[in-house]
Amino acid sequence: NPSVIWQSNLLKEQIYQTNEPAYIGNIWNVISTPEEWIEQGSYFFEREFYKAAIECFKNSGNELLTAKAEAYYREKIGEYHKAAISFEKLGEKNKAAENYERSGDFAKALHLYNELQLKDKIFACTIKTFEKEKRFEELANIYLSISEYQKAFDSFVKSGNYHIAAEISYNFLKDIASAAKYYEQAGSFADSAKLYLKLKKIEHAAELFEKANDYPNAIKLWQKLKNQQQLIKIYQTTKQLEPLLVIYEKERSFENSVKVLREIVSSKEIDLISEAQAYFKNRNYFAALIRFYLTNNNNGVAESAFKLKYFTDAAKYFELAGNHFQAAQSYYRIKKYEKAFSHYLNSPEDEQLKFTSAKKIG
Image 1 (cartoon, rainbow, N blue to C red):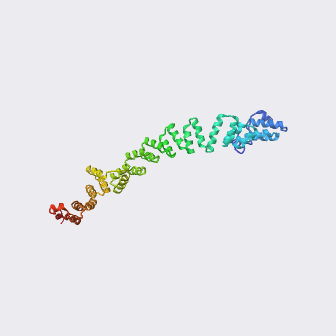
Image 2: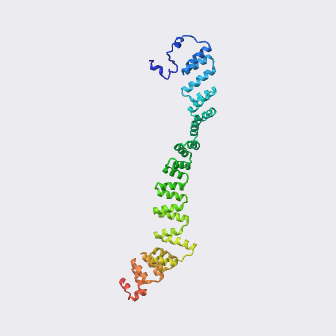
Image 3: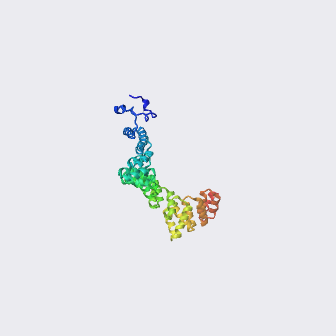
């Protein structure tokens, strides 16, 4: 066996090994004619010893064979682009295309494959060209045409066409979470919301229905989640005053309730007195209170406030209504005994009781 020295990168292109008797027998013969150089060069070329072939062909003066050997030599050592240029000059389009492709120059390779009408190569090289040039949507459509759905999905995502990516994810890849994500990124909020609802992500679904201005569905979900603040926001945005008033009344938000009720009354005729009395009778004292307030019914406000144990407000409005006995009782509850005593003294009811209540304080 030959020494490993002869296999080193420095020497292996300079040394030719052979056991062929014919070659060894002629090794001392002097080559002098162009034909003999071509014959010698062809011998090396056929055995892929292109460096030696180049020298022989050069010595023969045959430029075409020299160029051909140089092209194959460039290919052998991995200089694919230089090899491709050489093969193209030689008219070897197939070899040129292959080497352009290996070098990453897919556009030139594709041009030659089209000339050669090699369909499989055209298809493969088109894909590589689109990848290199980042023509992801065109690439995605190719993958879609051959039912490569995962690759089509990935390419549509890279192209920024999130809507089609979502549709592929949902219809072909059966990935609901991915479809929901990309519908949202595409701005298709209603489609995304429906899928998040399937995934039981109710809060996010509600947010997306709201973004899509699908307020009925958003309201249903916020109601299910008992998220009053989100409901208030929607009712304010959509000017749904009646349900907004219901929330404020449940929260016993006096200023907000009065403001909304005043807006309602300004747009349609309502018998607030009758409503207030009905609410009071049904023990919905807060709803009664705001209606009595808007009708300037001080006694009604006071009675409602007293039932709600808002004794400070009850005292104030009983006083405004001239109801001294009830005002005294309210002041007594908040430990303002001087005020309570004064009102008992002015109260006909306590006078009939010989000022029993006043005496208790005194």
